[in-house]
Amino acid sequence: MLQTICIIPNEQTFPTDIGLIAENLLYYKQVIIIVGTDTLPKLLKNCDIEILQELITRKLLRICICENFIGVFSQQTQSGITINDVTSFSVPELTTEEFVFNGIFKSSGRRGYSKRATQKLLPFVESIKYDDEVCDMVREDLCEHSFIKSAILNTIQFYIPDVNLTINQIQYEWVKNNSGLGYLFNTNLDYEKINKLIPNNPSGNIINPTNLIGNILHTRGDMHLASTFNAEITTTAINTSLMKLKFKQIYENTTKHIDEIFQFNDFVLSNGFAIREAINSGDKEFKDFIEILNKADKFKSWLDKIDGDKSIIKEYHEAVTRETWVDKLPSKSVRWSLFTGVGLLLDISLAGGLGTAIGIGVSFSDTFLLDKLLKGWKPNVFVEKDLKKIITK
Image 1: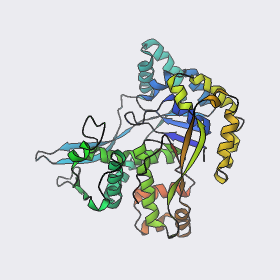
Image 2: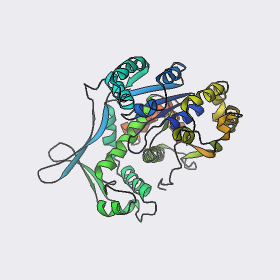
Image 3: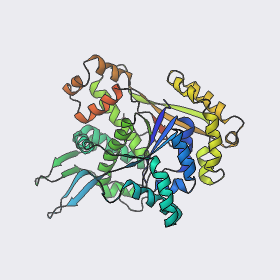
Image 4: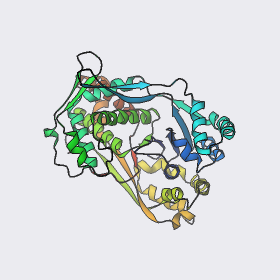
């Protein structure tokens, strides 16, 4: 726990700001940022390139840019039927260098400076990509009717916590279109009625097949990237809840430990400080935070012992922030959601590994996650804010 974390932004619902990065840098030995189109401009408005270079050189920070994208493809046939599919694609002309330049230019508005700054930052930026199998994994997820019906209900409950709807009332099927191109995402949901119940929904179209499929797609993409780095994760609230639901499904399909309840246990640091808020508001600059990081270096070895004793988190936090500007900030709770699937891993390892898992009906896409778990990946979540309790019992 608290070794490496992967921050995966969403420009609309989970933009990555400099304050969030600061909080993650305090609690983790290394922070990996998957940079979106708006991430670099936000970082560079509050942080000099030289500071980013220093953090990367000290192996506290990694900045990664995806060479490809994943998305939902929807279109109407001549008969008026909407067909859907998931796809990965790249933009050949959008090189890593061009991506970095666009981000710096969006921040500075100065072309010459942006070209020079790009050359300074480019050697410190890594390129990654989604594997080709990710879309196939999502198609398998979409065939898991029980999982998707739970995911649909979770998503609706996120926006409408007191909605009068149960899983048994949801009808769903994912059907190959007769033309062979795309799939039909069929439900009995009244999307118009549901969207009218969602407050602050100016588009009136938050809940629709494209977005529901997109949530499944990006949740799978988040897990893929985080597990590739063997990192914990912080991502959107929706994707976090669907990730928990996916692991719950895998657990129920595989474990023989009927007396063990699968869950993500919350750990709350109740005496944390509002570091993110102070930096984002401008009360403190990011460069002021560097002195805190320098002090934290002396105590980072404590993080190796946390799995056996969560109280070390509190001791670490107090030692790092004591007699600094941080301990004068307003207090706030800091929350982690910790994976507890011991019975799941024990059953899989003792029963002959992944081959046995496939034999009892676990999909190929889920064996990818099981393999990562057996190799030591712990999908703990650094919770950006309190999540609504929307995991369906």
